[in-house]
Image 1 (cartoon, helix red, strand yellow):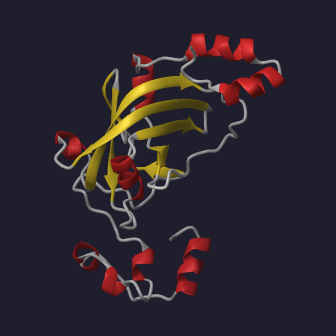
Image 2 (cartoon, one colour):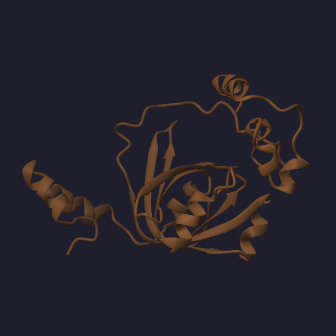
Length: 216
């Protein structure tokens, strides 16, 4: 029995004559653990894409960024990553709390290279790993159920220019993003946000101008 394919996948594979190839790929590349090479590469990444499922069963994908070492390989079956201050929605973390199934996509646009991880995630508000990521609110741990290297054939090559200035430093400090200065939000901001905001309030048009310049 396949771990990757259901009846719908098989229908397409049969329609386009790829069932044998799909089976061979599953037999060849699918694993349920992280090996040494995977671990070194994962821990060299400073971003990944996280897929979660919300309370209505809808899939969603988020970009997660930070410093190198954003994701820690705890052991061959476990990954861990932090949740940094965002917009206060806690969308991904809330989704995980309700539905643990997640997907993680790691991409290197310069090489290129791509790795997919499927797993079951949990959140511990007192996770001892929290100290590994100064400035983080939470830590999610992912039990790896499936992992495989994905063909980089259609990955366009891009060059990394600079790290985001909003990544927390070694003390967990980071500048407040411009959107927290937008009119109409000030009375809803958290206490910790209010003391970290510099500059005058701005209207939405001014904020859109900043976004257009890549400084939102």
